[in-house]
Length: 79
Image 1 (cartoon, rainbow, N blue to C red):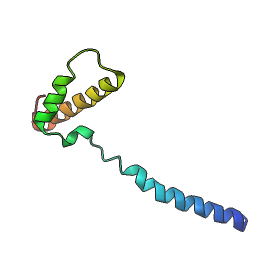
Image 2: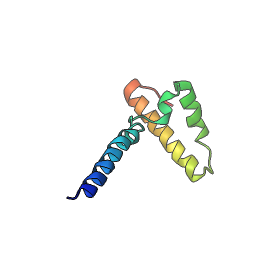
Image 3: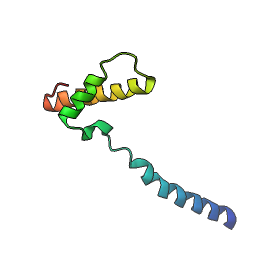
């Protein structure tokens, strides 16, 4: 390996290693709805019960339902 190639590989490795932790910061395993109180979560869940949701709204409601399921299992909470 030439010095130029070795230097380029080192720069690439340093850049890759410095970016990797930034990518992991969003992987805390929780949902954006973990911060909501039980009352707020149940209000959001009720808002999802109407028809005619956009695809983004449907995905949001799926995430809310997932958080409700997690709380039901962990805390015996029902939305």
